[in-house]
Length: 452
Ligand code: PFF
Image (cartoon, rainbow, N blue to C red; front, side):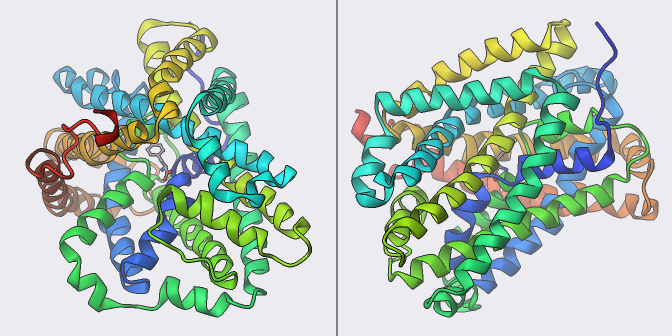
């Protein structure tokens, strides 16, 4: 095997990690979650979740990856704790599982770029969503999305992932800023901002039991934690980066994009009097086209804004999808000395097959999503935090300090990780397991109703 690849520049790594973090979770879930759960009040909780729980956990993944210099599964042997490989395996399995339905949604988004260009997505939004979201056309679009993801990953770290995300991430930000500026000119903008951001501590407090774990779960998912992705990306790093500085940059950029997305989506909906609804697929895929169709300019303006908006969502989804595939590809390449390109193609084929049920029926997609986000993700994060906090200990501190401009923070970081972060994640896992296994209405052990 040739020499293992590394990122060519530090900013290349940071952009790739931001590309992974910024995804459907930011543009699609975050604005609606915020507006439904207390606006700015929710934002404060979310920021706390990102900085106090997400960031230390992100640094834990970075420490493991950079120190081990190998994939998320091989890392534990490389660190001299081979028995813990299961932690990495759970994560990589979760990445693979998630990619299967994430790319189905990616396929929908691609269809929406096309449907905005032709105008069909705007002419009859509900019918269009029905036609795009399930059945054979969805299987086809899913295949195309997987193929593009495979293509980028097959090209490797420097010529594939780094090159792609260096173009993609700045484009996402620039286009979103453009869209937000446009949205600010719409008549309903201020109402949209008010709905998005007005602090409503009452709503937050009243729903704390469900909102808090949701906010923490969203923070973990949004930072791409638990799936071995950040371990894998950090394994391509040299020793001279400051992990805390890079981690903070990534966490801040990720939240910034979520807020920016809200500044686009909510004024747009309010300007056209479209109810923001509960979020979820309907929000982006039905409400947005409805609002776009109502823009002045005889439909042309709506189509142009639609192409740009869904273009942004597409790029965001793709830059996350490549990280999910890379976690699994890196494992096979590093541990079994396989060639990267055929490995990416082979795994792509399996991901495609696993995603077919989700493409055929959105009930399956919900089910896959539920297992990934409420079960696999928190369990994977919990085991990783336990490992770094309580097993890796001194080695973790040493790695945190390497290249760090804030080496003095290392003991505080480890302390927070093994106490506060661990405790919060335990609570999230417990609440989720309770929902999963003890609440008949929400339990994912129950096959979704329409499938029975
Ligand atoms: N962070 C991505 C999002 O917010 O859409 C989703 C994701 C990507 C989660 C990669 C986990 C991951 F490993």
